[in-house]
Length: 220
Image (cartoon, rainbow, N blue to C red; front, side, top):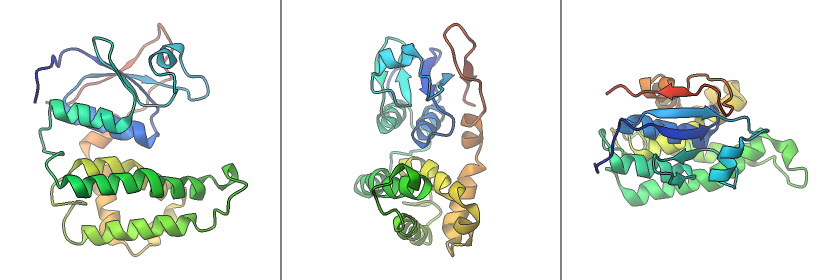
């Protein structure tokens, strides 16, 4: 843990259901930071967010001195390097990197085409769900060895993957929960029932300049 004034509030532009934003919020919460949550309408992004991060995607974290971090994995690493009370970073770094890269590339690509096939009219999306299933099955097999993906304790890999597995389950919950993957189902439900997940998934109104923000205050 490095020196940082935890009394200072961090500004986070976010979208409640975005998997990238979810994992960013979970890491900030776990690290103990108070978050001024600015919920974004993705069809009408606030000027302040675009000025801070012209690429226009969430999450966007603004530190008290104005530094901007606008990639979810960078936000996770920044927060956990400041304070990692449960050792989310204390895991096999090579395996963690592989799992996150596969999730953010192969799985995310397949998930998008499974969930939104109409967005890809020039592509054959029929195999997308099968690709998702292949990766889900690998995760289920890993979970046969321990409670979480890399060990019995939670790691950054679990939190980085969790929102995307949740999103996949929500596309067709009957299909997902009929998969013979009990370890994966149990893992997902355990994390969805956790205090940290419920705390960062609170509903808030869309933020506008001069309007009220939502504060997320972790339990210390």
